[in-house]
Length: 367
Image 1: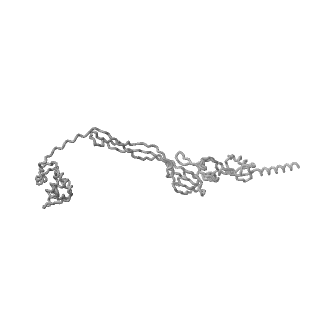
Image 2: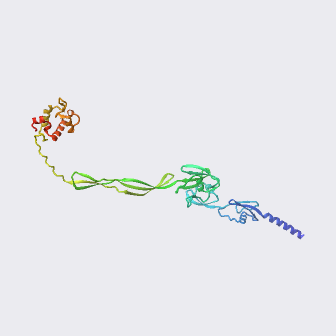
Image 3: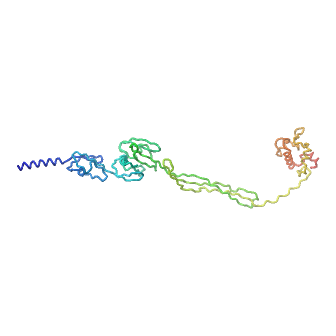
């Protein structure tokens, strides 16, 4: 009787032990292992699998849940990633394996989120995570948008290469989630340049008095020349728009040359008296009062339009055309005014004397 009872007890115990043993699968970031355990909770199975989840890791079912045979346990380890949330740099934990997944996770809270990028030593843009795995990526650059399909797990630098985008030294890259849920890479073109401009600098004029020149005389002894002012301006341009500007230098690079004028101070000598002219002979002495009217009366009868019968001599004083031209007249003497004819006659008399009118000057006693 005792032996039979013991046999029954052992049989029941074996059945209980066998039913407590479980076989479960554990998926750690995509790597799956099969675990056999007598543990009664998810935490116990993870311990057997050698997995210690962190505070920010995702475990499904939760570590405190009871464990059943055939259970599938999923563990996703979290990483701390740099984001810009509502304009502020922030470190957040995420279980996303790509930037696209991490951004979708954080942006689901309704906040404006981008992922911070940095440049490696060779100037290539980096993220804390790969950009996408087998997904489309939208690009916004140079005022245009384009979509490029990515195959496999692709980082930011490789994605930009596939999109045919070359970054400048200062260009900024931001990664976000677009309106349609597609990852959006925005490239902001940034440049910093120095620009030189020039302006003229007026020259001054200096007046110097000198006793080497007569009063009323002025001579430019040194010509003035404008100088040059060079202005160097630094500009920061974002997507073609100047957002900041500073004057780095402003100096005269070519000095102007002063204009120098010498003004005479020496008194002029008194004019010498004109030599007396004889009223006779063929020389040009001064004419007595009323002589020109008398001479015109004698030569042409006082008619300004008179022309000799031969057509050779014209006007009050019977000029030949050649003589008229020689004393500055123009046209025909007979067509000029009486005042103009008298003026030219006086010039001729001063130059050649009264002998130009031999008959009438003798008659009038002028020579």
